[in-house]
Length: 38
Length: 431
Image 1 (cartoon, one colour):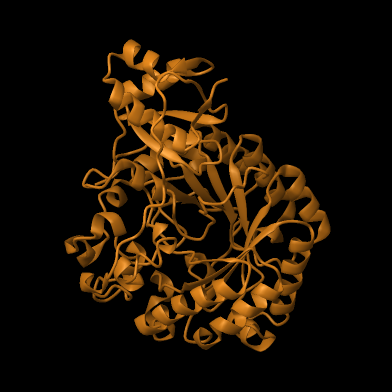
Image 2 (tube, chains in turn brown, yellow):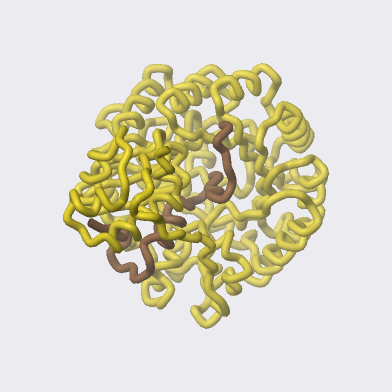
């Protein structure tokens, strides 16, 4: 049972990878804000 | 090489290719020459929604062109995306924004808008948009959206035309009460690359813009951001710019763009097409984007020791540049510090009772599964056994010790995994 890396070449910790995986271009990828009201 | 997901996690949907501005820096390949612009029909919007639902896509951006040119179709798309639980934001120049549209958007639950402000004066802004009166329209739109309670993110696209006005635009954005001010470099995508290069900012100007952004952050009550991925060597001081470094190129990996013609593209910058969502669905064209998951467009960046974490520069720009290099990529020696990972993981008590977050998404993948919160802000990719375990825990209360026993997994390992889930709000206390 484990967390897997999306990037197969990655050597970093899983939690670090996935915390930034969604950050792309031209959109709001603010994972620090609480937008639960939306 | 990235693993292949069954579908994207985030999509940009270009509802129309029409725009009332004609920005000189526009990366839309369809915004140049004598192209006849397309708009999605109601039926096509329904297909898009149905496909997004089928693959549990969690986040969306409605963009264009300018979405508000076709308000009925735009609102239908926004409503559809909200109805399937997607967290959706809108990219618009706000010129056509009004109370009626704002009220509808808020009713739907779409409360975040991203817009562009190119200059602090009408002269500069309208010169770049090539649309007289556009500055006034956008500024009025920002004020109205803020007065209605929208979260407004304002981006300044940086070129040689306006690079000397970052501070002034930042101050104007602050006085308008925006939530975020972004100052983002213009890239040089294919169709306009050849004659546009001379208008791109230099690496020195880019670094100065970052410095000014962080000075503005201290002055105004807003966040600062860049709305594109910058190569790590361009950012340089990654400890200072950890927040900005969170943006990577995710094209074809976790995200993609659906054009107004239904064509699936890796991102809005790219004119590469992989199939039509209207006629083939989302999965088939998505599966064809393996070239992006293999990162074959990353040029000389693949030799860099930071490549896996940085993801290199903009692949579309690299493809179109003469030297196969993002023009702001310098050298890994310019990376003087590394990003700070602020995520704190507290080790959980194995005998406490927990439950899965009611809004958790469990999406089956070939390698196991994607676990995400409904708003898509937190994600984990897990192996088959972990995924099956979580599926079985749905609608149940459980202790970590119980999970360890039932799955025959080492208790410390299970504590570690569930502590990560807890830190990402994927599980909560069950009492």
